[in-house]
Image (cartoon, rainbow, N blue to C red; front, side):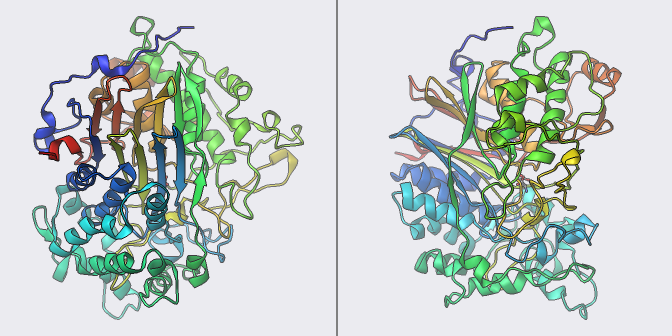
Length: 617
Ligand code: GLU
């Protein structure tokens, strides 16, 4: 086994690169070093807002709140007040890392087969009953209350001004405005649910004309909502009796549904919204070649799968080109793909929310134990593609499970997961870091915008199993880890992640992309740690993703992987489907010794890197 030298990655980072000054489109990453704080987002304007907060003396948590609200304005199709997310925060002073879990929850009316009657994903994911109680606002306000230095109303101010005065429509937003998600119930006006789907259209296709890149997008209703929250705090959003009226409007909006939906309307009520809470979670972590990978616990599967894959890969000499384990080489791809298949098989059976009242007990400790993962890694053979990959049984490796003799034989199920959310990372001059994935699930969420309040409602509940899996038969045991239930959070793949060396954070990153997030975050981890790539290169490098263990599952493949590797993989039995882009990494690196800070924004989306140093006189 190769023992990797543990070195800081700054030796490969150019220090004199002014590429951040160029247009955002030509900027897949930046080699410019900063010291006073860096913000990297999918949208340049949001990055600017974050950098302004930092330059004004705010910390990373302040900037994160401001960026989150600003993204609701400039990239409303991907995140916002009507969604949720995971906000990972590293606090420099105490060297502590926490996660605020503001994932949406299912209302009390939710039940395991609530989605079973509607096999059409497009219909169920654009209906009001797919809406989970939104949490995003509480991520921002809880973070500010705990660690911030500015008020919620100050954090809202830049987004409020942008919504009021208008922002220029980006090419990506313009392209998304043409998506069929905004076409729902476009037909005759006598359709009773049509008006609900007209609300978002009125904003993004005024008078039926889609906004184009370069047009001005003005969102007075959203600005009004920001005003209400700035005035009264989160109560304006979460208290049903509040004069702001936001909660009642959410309830009414999610009761609207597509005419063809047999499972009825959304069942969220005022009590569901009023009782919504965020969780303060400890991240999960494990070491990988001398680095500590700190990542997202359940209800995300992202961190669990990432750590499992890394653990399975650690025995292989990844990064050693002479051994065929260099970047993009056949053996590297082969073992990565097999580890992905094993982790995704486990994910389908064993991972979901474990923190709600009725949530099943889940063997997460077992899934991450060395003994269990050694057995799983033993299934991977270089030059082989496994047939019949199924979930393992981690319960014998988990003290929370008394009866290890009961074996799982349940086959994993596939989910419809096509999310398209957003990620951003911020580091301030003190070394506080926020890495935050926030989402309304699909692009445009349900497509339902709350009338008069100007924000879109998520369809996050479609991240639950469409068909329940729970099974108490000892021979086919399945905990139903991700079956829908009252108050439960749907399983996510979002994976805000940090890399530590000798106790210090040295990198933070994350990506949108539904289940592919796991493989995108994995790729960047390997690029930095094993392939010794620069930050910029680690983000640019072509990626592939396999999110199913099934024998006939196709690998999603970006262009530019060497043809001989593809031929080699084909010979092993892998199938491919070409895809233009997988994910959109946002990343920072910080060097503990020099305090230099670097940021990279993935050109797969527009991307924006900004820095406080840039703004200060
Ligand atoms: N619903 C997705 C998840 O939680 C959203 C993330 C994304 O698609 O980017 O995994």
